[in-house]
Length: 486
Image (cartoon, rainbow, N blue to C red; front, top):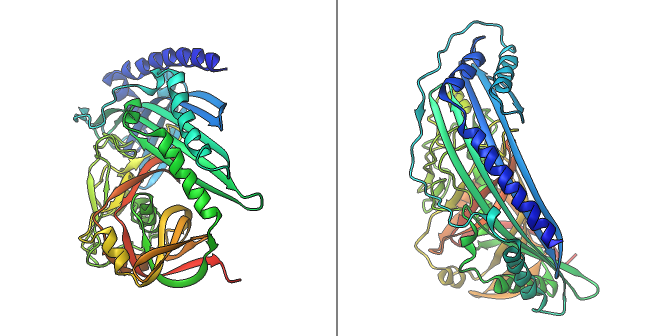
């Protein structure tokens, strides 16, 4: 089976390289003609997005390979905007004739005459902040299998109560070309590589799961200093600990949210509400509040798509705009939103390099990249010591949020009680319930241990790699749900 997957991979890599050449063959003369066709009936903006992507998934359950998939995506989309109305279409035929035909079909949605000229193309130049040394698609499958086997070994050998461990390695290499009637001409290559593990512990009566992941906009060199065995072992430790934990008793109390993936609280409870996707429609709790105090004085939040090799980073966004560091909240004051071209026009706001889409099959809109609270002045130990009674959410899970109200509900994958300034017994089944606007104002301590977690964010323009991050924070009062005591 492994030999078959290896041979298939070699074939697809060759196919991918040939497809990438198609993007490079697009001339600026052809591009101009396509855009002129798109604008012929009165559109005021037209854009073409071309993509070739190869993705690989390798999965090992316990000690057996259970999945080995390779997928190639290649296609092109066209969108035309007139005032605030957008028409969008796509095809996997990347020939010039096909793209021009698609542009003409979309232009027929409007019945006016030409009002906008195609601006001279200005190529977007940048220093590649996300170099790749070892392309994942050229790495031997044996090396990938070895990484995953060690992860599972670390988990399975930790305890007899670990009944299953599933390790997954995914990689995706995406080449894009974006050109638009405003003169945009931009290319980028994104290489996203990630390892994941899901572990199940059982005592014969109750089952408990734990998971973790490790990802970068980088090649296989990201594993050079990665201890696969320890990664699996640490994940198994969480599953076993929570297996023997008491059920959380629902109550209101101070909550300490740990660093790294704890930043999902910012991402979900606040970040989505700061995307122009919601703000421009007036559907965000933070619409029209630039310059207003929305958080405690010690809170500064940033979305930064430029961090070297970070999981959510890009050289340019999916509209061809260079990414940048966007300060969203500074010392509690709302400073900016994340803005794409279409919504920026509606809001009369500057674009921020935040337009993203899963693939050519999606129209872009404003999305997060690497979103995080910056470091505070406290230490982790000081936060724990200064909490007489509270709850410590060490590892966060998934959740849901309503951007129009900011109300959220998050699962806690690993939690502990804090009593008399010390972390004491583990508790399971805890959920954090509240509102983003309330949580931001109740943050009263921030540590100096910023780190990141790596996830996938789903929204109207598809599923995208994003980093969530923060130092350890304390929320002075929060509702924690649980089944204990019932």
